[in-house]
Image 1 (cartoon, rainbow, N blue to C red):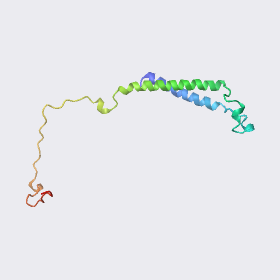
Image 2: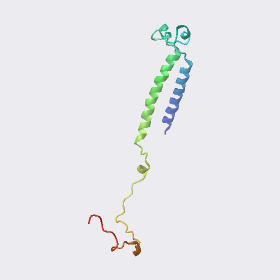
Image 3: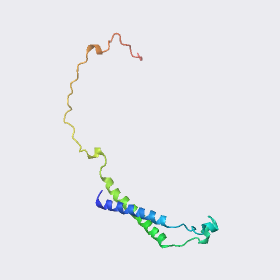
Image 4: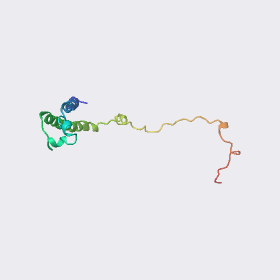
Amino acid sequence: MNWVQTLAVVFHVLLAFAIVGLVLLQRGRGADAGAGFGAGASGTVFGARGSASFLSRMTAVLATLFFLTSLGLSYLFSRDAAVPTSVMDRVPAQQAPAEPAVVPSAPVPEDALPDMETAPAPAGE
């Protein structure tokens, strides 16, 4: 991993922590009025759109940056996919020997061979 990828990953993780922190700092839309109007009716007090505070706008900006860094990281790490990752791909190809080597075989003892007179005949005959 080169320094650009490392820097992008660190920035991406910091953005994730910042988004979590901003979301935890915000209150729900009906947090104060929820007890007075009930859980379902509190959304109608503030309207369909709600109030856009500094924290909610900052969360939207950080979320956009988070998505952009996600796309950037996927591009950066996809460029390394062309590098062989298998051990077999890294081994240089060796040429086959010109003539196959003759392997001497060990002699077979006579008592290991089946006796042709007492051996059963094949089933097809």
